[in-house]
Image (cartoon, rainbow, N blue to C red; front, side, top):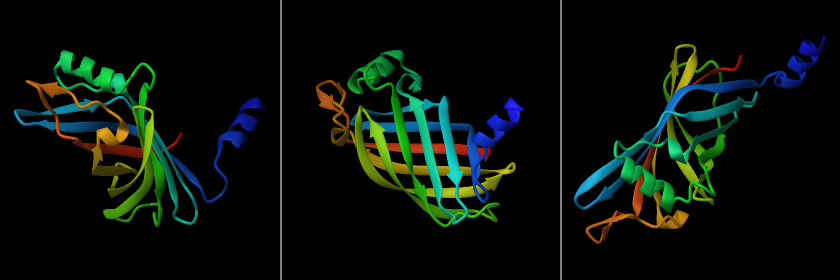
Length: 178
């Protein structure tokens, strides 16, 4: 009986569907005059709520400490300049419109969202490519941010700072929640 009550409380209302993130990655790219740095996290959490009217509410986050650039010193520096101890997660949340399930084929959409990094929040329109895959939906995206806009002190090498513009990209596979 308790299991039935829990199921009813967790189940979305009729016409709505919950999608959980099955797998995914988030990557940042920063550019210095001498090289580029990519850091990737595969420890991504996310969920989407698809409403009957085609509106989708999405939230995706990753621990700042989970990003790996292949250079541990660089990763420690990234955690310091983003104040990871005080702000352990980076997050994107927002709303897509006009998405009906099942997705009939690839399509483009725009996530009207908020990006949070270093304790700072900024609104951002993110172009997203949606594609049906393995009974779920793959969402891929790339968008620029300003490090200074998020109050991130830009790291430097040989007294030259990395560019203010960083690029964030994601590859996320959502499936129906169990």
